[in-house]
Image 1 (cartoon, rainbow, N blue to C red):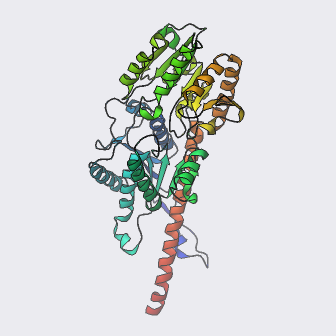
Image 2 (cartoon, rainbow, N blue to C red):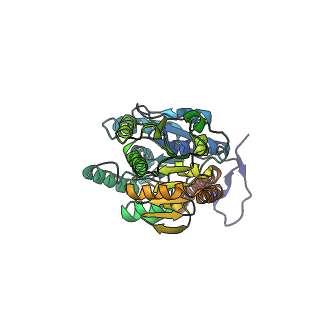
Image 3 (cartoon, rainbow, N blue to C red):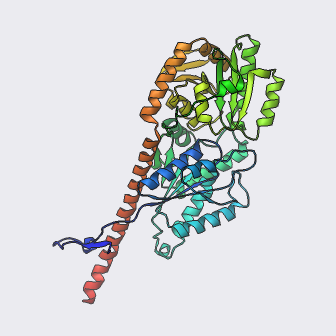
Length: 454
């Protein structure tokens, strides 16, 4: 069937509108992330890739490899029907192999011919946006300053401007990010207002008009769908309080603070009947287990390792903790809230954006609608906040209920997909409008020449 249809000519109508698409092809999206390691960003890109296919987009996910010591979530992608394209040289750290990564990404882009290239996280954001910019400009039309009209989008799930590297390396990464925002990015997605304020306002990355705030989402259908047997597995009584922390065991998550707070609570005699559970794996596991032993935590703490049923485990936790020194909006807190769990967290990144209204502040911690926050690194305040929450079951229950309502109203996976699709459609419309304006310019330039020739 001919995919074009004729339209009636009307006097004064520009001839470029005489042919219109009857069934335009789907918008093609290439999504790039450095690796599908355990964490929120992996779930985020898989959900977007899988769900947008159902809505008529052509979507491809490109990723790197997960190093030893980190859990691999490729199983999660495959369960969602997504088979990522893997560039094995793409990893978290900068290296000479990045030249190979950029070349391989460029080759994939030439093959896939995307309308939108969307990068996620720092490493893929750098290599991916360089490759995307080369893809735009390595075309014959660039000779007359007309690159390919694809759009480049980058999402900051967090950032690496503190808590990761030393001063010199951080300055280098800041310079790279500022250059990327200026020359290689059409839209920047921040996952919370607080994150946008920090990245643009504090670190001076990008222009205000480039930013779009699109909060994370979670799969509400998964919350509560599985029942946990954590207490039974660990022999924890129903009357005991379980404080859990879920996440990758790495420096930025600062699990050492969690363990030191547990030890201090125990030494002060307030930790009786409290069991601490660390869910997750990573390069610091052995070091953290040694620290727990040195602190005399003994049977008071359990390292549960990586669990595919991590979402189910929240139902057996009375409090869910986060001790990070740097975050975007932590999916672990959103998941905990979706399961009706109150949270206690360091006040970093977009954490305050999901806490609701602040109700009180005392002794170094703040009480909010959905949980409690303390200053990053303040172990003593974290201990006081834990002790405060431990003896208030009614408050914990109310926080959990409010948090659950907040997540269901504002942070669903469906809302996330709808927001990203709306952004893509707006960018694609910009692309079409731009192409139409260029055609008008070409035709206007040709008209005098044709008249003269006639």
